[in-house]
Amino acid sequence: MLDVTDLHIEIEDSLIPETVVYDFDLTVGAGEIVGIVGESGSGKSMSALAIAGLLSRRDMKKHGSITFEGNELLTMNRSMLRRIQGDDIAVVFQEPMTSLNPVKTIGWQVEEALRIHRDLSDEELKRAAVKMLDDVEIPDPEGCYHKYPHELSGGMRQRVMIAAALICDPKLLIADEPTTALDVTIQAQIIELLKKINREKGTAILFISHDLSLVRTLCSRVVVMNKGRIVESGPVEDVFAHPKEEYTRQLIGAIPKFEKIAGVTYHPDRKPILEVSHVSARYRKVTGYFRPNSKPKQVVSDVSFTMYEGEIMGLVGESGSGKTTLGKTILGMLDDTEGKIVHYSQMPQMIFQDPYGSLNPTKTVGRILEEPLRIKGGYTAAERLAMAKDMLGLVGLDETYLKRKPNALSGGQRQRVCIALALMLGPKLIIADEPVSALDVTVQEQVLNLLIKVNRELGVAILFISHDLKVVYELCSRMIVMKSGQIVEQGTDDEIYNNPRHPYTQQLLSSAGYVNR
Image 1 (spheres, helix red, strand yellow):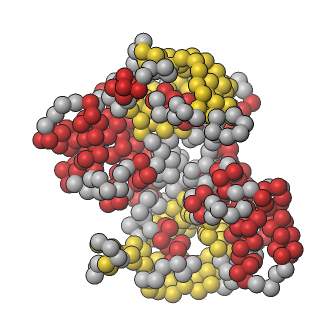
Image 2 (spheres, rainbow, N blue to C red):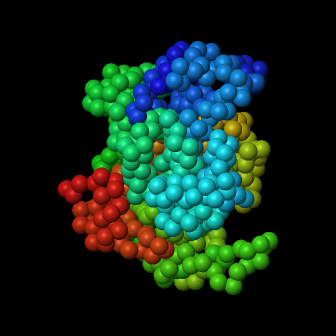
Image 3 (cartoon, rainbow, N blue to C red):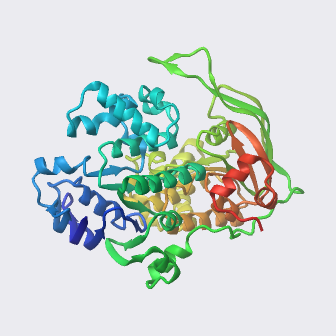
């Protein structure tokens, strides 16, 4: 059905043209599920966007061949290509919140492809949209039809994206990182949904991901990319069981496993560094322009726990469970709270989930790192510069990065800068909010090893917020499980993983594939 031969993509929007995909070959048969894996910047998404016809024709040079059911897409005129886009070939993007129009209802957006490619009445459009929302297993599809994206959870928004992509019964679905940053239970549901779509509708799927475990679960064949080139391809089980290339072996070896890498242990005899007692937090709903609703939404309810010096403690739970809100409450970033929070250290810091959104895009790395020192005062310009250089060295970056801006860094490098920024004032407690969820497995491993280094060498305690139970098992000595704003279970890693008491914890572990030891 799809045949890509010698695809070559070159970006020409800078002084020096950059080749991002070299001689890419791919075939996808009708009803087949094929995976493309590789690190960030390997050319996965570029290749997929070229297949979908979504790359600019002005500042990109492309040659080779992309044929879909015998039609050459690469040189096809725009009007003919539009007949295929959204109808025969559909795309599900990585981040549903930025892919969905915030001012249009869910129903309007799911119907959009039908309005373009079919001649249907308003009643027929609505009936088809509600049925498709039901097909992707959204509760109350009729009610969802009238909602806006911000009123849905991350998992529900991703289902809406899939519904919108499938509304015209495409022959090929391109899924570009559709489960990144979703918690394990929602990830498992989306994977099962894609399997169901493939099984019942016969839709071929091109599944792009940096999560090799998901690719192995879903796909029959896999293509491994590195620096714009295909380094290995073949049946999934053959590639995973007998990888031929060193790069493939590195990717597979970096997959998080239920194995300890940190050697961090729980020391109840150590002094507390944080005590949280009966803490609750609320958000006020906003209706219209900055008019607070009289009924605030309770997000965290009666949470209590203690952290000790030098420990790494995990905080897990599905999207919307209150993990991030609890982290912000601990650092005094929310106003509508109650309870008692006692810090036994000064200037605790936070590492946010999105490193690009956390760094000022107009400032250099050096300026960003010096900012906390400048605000605190008492340092000369030379001292600030020396401390910024030293901190970059600690996180594995040399001083040449001081003059770069965030857009000149990779995702892993930006996260290293965020960690360096959090360490500039010498805190003894850091709250790391999903710091590796959007990173590929090799960069994820590097960042985790960096956090372990920070913990061991500087004695920094870390509250590690994550939805990945494998990463939490590797890193943490104790963990807290949250659901619907409450702690449902807490204890040592051995207690939680091998003797989970709460049904929700059992569900999380089952979704993550943990086997009791």
